Image (cartoon, rainbow, N blue to C red; front, side, top):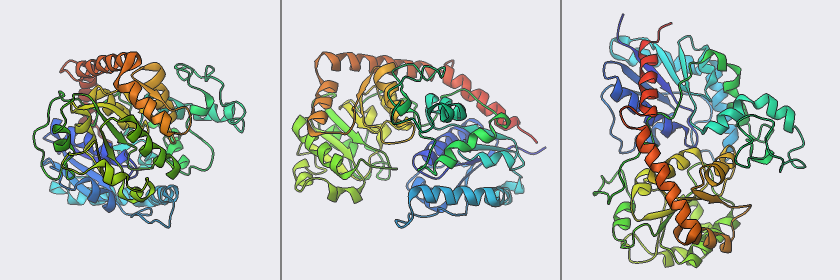
Length: 433
């Protein structure tokens, strides 16, 4: 019997693919005798692999199908739906065949590690290990999706403030019906979100978290990175600061941004706070912020109080000792990286599981706060002040350091995450039909 050939299949939207690539890299390093093929769309791979260093036993295979490209004429949810439809119509099986043909010795795929949104993997003819890229509360909400839909139904507006106490594991930390991921239109992301439920009994499960974007490195002044890792000089800009943990880092991820009115309020609030800030904001959103803001913010030489860039190496930024606060959408990847960096957060959830994640940050883990509704200039300035100073800020910073220590413990050789990861490796390399 030949060496294992493991295919890692990404859901190529939002932050799903980067998380799966981090898992694929960790697997390829941990199992050097196996071959790994990472499957995603050409557009996704182009973004992921720009300047990336790749393991010798990790190969990349382009998947075809609908949803490819960044077509502004087609809504994101429709692109997701087209991709899922194409994968279900045989696109995934054809991609696995292509991966096998391109592998050394034309080795057929022996195991499929897939984003849990790619539930059609259960019918691909090889053992499937599903990876959930979101948080545990969102996973529980999806596993209880039918019960939540029956409970909430069309009453979300009138009963939105009721606690989820009737759903075990979801009623803690002030989680309410309005915080649960939506299971009604508009998301035909809903189709993808609900997909793992159809085959959940047929997939292997491994406790998390697993190595990937959340693993922490010691906070220290970063050495000069490769140009491809930090093309806009964010870490060099932070190195020029002289007040430890005084910088506010702002990022709402790659999948969505706050509405234009809130972007303007956010910009005004950052200025009003008086704190130096680093803001990762997609360039197409720059015209939406107040006139003159970019000029006042300064440039990459670090001579002014702020820096706005189209992209930042977020994990490295949050490890930097100058960063003392994190304003974000509370996507799970951002929450994990905030915890790993020991940086308190101010959350403005936008959609999906972000509401539940924000409650986890503010009410359960207590290392941050959450905006109650839309961001305003005064609200942003107050949130920044609460994270950087005062009694509440001291409490949240202390709690952030405690959580960071727990992450360190989990990633020791005998820590829980490393034990889980070794189980994960054993499952996939031993998998056979």
